[in-house]
Image 1 (cartoon, rainbow, N blue to C red):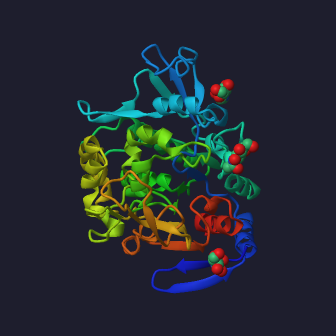
Image 2: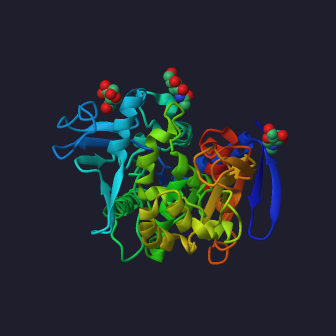
Image 3: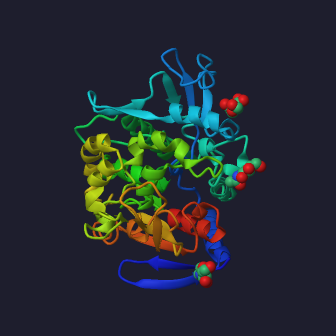
Amino acid sequence: MATVVRLRLATTWLLVPVAAAILLSICVSTTRRAPQLPPVVVVPGYATNELDARLTELYCPSSPRCGARKGEGWFRLFLNYTALKDAADVRCFAEQMAAVYDAASDDYRNAPGVETRVPFFGSTRGFRYPDPDRRNFSYMDKFVSRLEELGYRDGETLFGAPYDFRYAVAPPGHPSRVGDAIFGRLKRLVERASRINGGRPVTVAHSYGGTLAHQFLLRRSLPWRRRFVPVAAPWGGVVLGMLTLVAGNNLGLPFVDPLALWGEYRSLQSSLGPLPNTNAFGAGKPLVTTRSRTYTAHDVADFLDDIGMGAAIGPYQSRVLPLLRELPSPRVPVACAVAVGVDTPEMLAYPGGDFHVTPRMVMGDGDGLVNLASLLAVDPAWRRPAAYFRILEVRNVSHTGLFVDDAALAVINLCSFS
Ligand SMILES: *[C@@H]1O[C@H](CO)[C@@H](O)[C@H](O)[C@H]1NC(C)=O
Ligand SMILES: *[C@@H]1O[C@H](CO)[C@@H](O)[C@H](O)[C@H]1NC(C)=O
Ligand SMILES: *[C@@H]1O[C@H](CO)[C@@H](O)[C@H](O)[C@H]1NC(C)=O
């Protein structure tokens, strides 16, 4: 498939139609000549890596079926296709995946009696196939294979930083037990990757992983930070993030009813981060309309209240918004890859006075999930202090297609190594 790649350089726009093969061969020959590959640490996107759980005596299942694994040790909670085929089991999955905001400690935690862990930290194994028994649910496999073809080896030069995507980090002054643990592990991993490879670590981060890695870099000292390759990061949130709070999110699993995960999705801090913010959408653009009300990115708190999530307004305003108000440059070489040219919901028009029907969607540009304005929200702000900044746009490729499409993969490699 021929793809037009638009290179966004410091001052000019270049329209470069490229054949994937050419780009790839540049990457291959460059890296072959290089005596040593720069170590790559991959931070995957939302709901891309495995999560394990175990159910303790404190767990109160809603049905005997949900409690079947109580006391039986660790099992794979995400992703297990077999365990999601039956709607009754999806209910168990939802209650075990849910989190709780505890106002007294100002932090999110798991449902009582559900312990979780992220397996294979340090390796790409935890997200190459999120369900190793159903390898077709994977979009990272091809990317990892490409890196291996270039000579990368898992645990030697290639590292994976899977994380508990239900959680997020909190701004200074607010605790985030899980978020702090994610950053602690990531710091040690990047340092190890760097130490055993003579420095030069590159952090490649997709989607939600990109916004997380950005927050991570901002908390490190300037000399510590290294090259950053965010891929399709939703800097300014996504309009679809409002729809998923109303209608549920099936985590991209077509056989799961989104409504079955409605309550679970609403319970997570990471569901509030992707709500549209004014960095990308301004305060005047209508994003959701009903017969009686128009919501812009400035009205997200009102929106939460009106969809019955009033309890989330506090944590949204204290724990989420402060991280989104500004998008400071990480002040390191940055090469972003984004996909554009795919119909992406830009406004949701509810015909009545409430949210009980499917809205009419007004489409705009983006990658099918993330709106163009959000993908580009760090531009031009990140150009100024950065020694090196560019955004490479791949046309007609979707948000996850970036890791599957040959031409797009070549662009990501170009971002990582050139
Ligand atoms: C993108 O897709 C549209 C519609 O399918 C097509 O008309 C257009 O030629 C494609 N552009 C590229 C650059 O592939
Ligand atoms: C996946 O779910 C099925 C059905 O509940 C179960 O038999 C199997 O052991 C689970 N696999 C893992 C790895 O937990
Ligand atoms: C994976 O395979 C299963 C069973 O063969 C199928 O139902 C499902 O739709 C496939 N998923 C994808 C993403 O292709």
